[in-house]
Amino acid sequence: MEIPTPSMLNGHVVAIPYPTRGHINPMMNLCKHLASSSASLLITVVVTQEWLGFIGSDPKPNNIHFATISNDVVPLQHQIIADIPAFFLATITNIEAPFEEMLNRLHPPVTAIIGDLELKFPVAVARRRNIPVALLWTMSSSFYLMMHRLGSFALNRRLEVNLLDDYGEHIQGISSSQLADLRVMLHQNDLRFLQLGLECLSTVPKADCLIVNTIQELEAEEIKSLKTLLNFPIYPIAFPYFKHETSHSVTYSDSKPDYINWLDSQPAMSVLYISLGSFLSVSPNQMNEIVSALNTSQIPYFWVALEEVSWLKNKCGDSGFVVPWCDQLKVLSHPSIGGFWSHCGWNSTLEAVFAGVPMLTFPLFFDQVPNSRKILEVWRNGLELKKSVLGSEELITQELILEVIRKLMDYGSVKGKEIRERAQEVKGICDQAVAKGGSSNTNLNLFIEDFLCVQGH
Image (tube, rainbow, N blue to C red; front, side, top):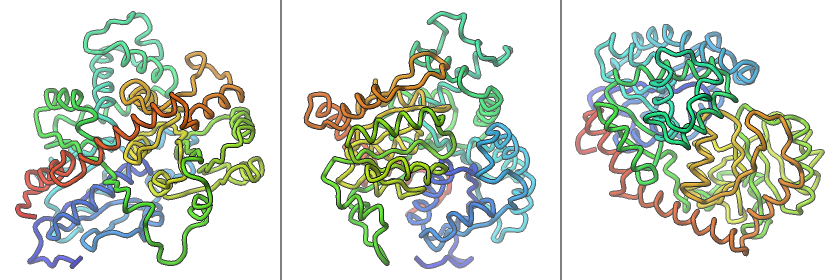
């Protein structure tokens, strides 16, 4: 793609994601599709120096540039797990000033900002500069509404663990299932983290529009409620724009990664893919139960683990393939994958539904609990590993894990066929949404025309 010269430019957009993988991935996907859809846009993505090292060499259109903020302003990625709320606070507090200083230096002048909603400051910065601002919500529409209702209920009340415990099953505006999930969130998450999230949500009405990382048809009622709640445009746009034919059949410039070669050697729908997210992990005792169950099952498995790679490789032996990182979309779309054991982060959930892979839900944090409920009760394309008591530290036993993974991977059983049929049905909805003329594709074009004011792109 030709690099736009100043005379060719139709705007200079600055995008700033929250500096973690689950937020940077959807922001980069959004920027790549904006840049590819309109060659006259210049897009500057602002990341920390650490994150530029992670993603700076990834393929991107020529009209996307990077600008960096010093690593000194927020903890490094490996330090986040020690205190997630402290990282959240540092991010929304310390990045604003250097970000605004950078905007002063950028040329040509910035004409619009796209900011992650969980940064809190993009709206204030845009208002001071009198330029439009769009916010990106990287989670589901239903979770946005859930957090909004929690914020409304907690107004003039103290946010505490037992906030909802004495209100039975009926609180106006909160469904019984949302109430159950909110109770779990209050009991299992650091309240400082939840409070900061609610503060970020409070800035949304002052923005010009909201982009939601979702498929409109999968959350139709929630999108309708959002449009009623917020008096500005809502753009449900799915990231990534996953296409099966461009994933597994990808051509490799040098040679295939070892993990693709390993997947190529496995029978169709035989491999259980396991990924439990970027930060939170399970206890050593729970890991032992999981590994024992997997090895006993004789089901081949592919496990992405960030911190425990060497330990897991020793434990797993020849039974599983363990890596510290993989291209998850390529793995999920590989014909050998028969199931996905997931923490139910929203990005992973969307990638699984686009790939048509049934899921085993194992939520650990924040929005993962309601995401799991959506998989199990709304889409019905997965099974769950149940925890026995709210907030309990009791282990999920090897025996239970073994029973559930065998049920998930038995694609010839009645239940196995049922969840796979549902997974394919949901996949079909997603494929239509991102096709030309589909809802997601249409909303992307509307965003470019209405917010970025680029016509005929």
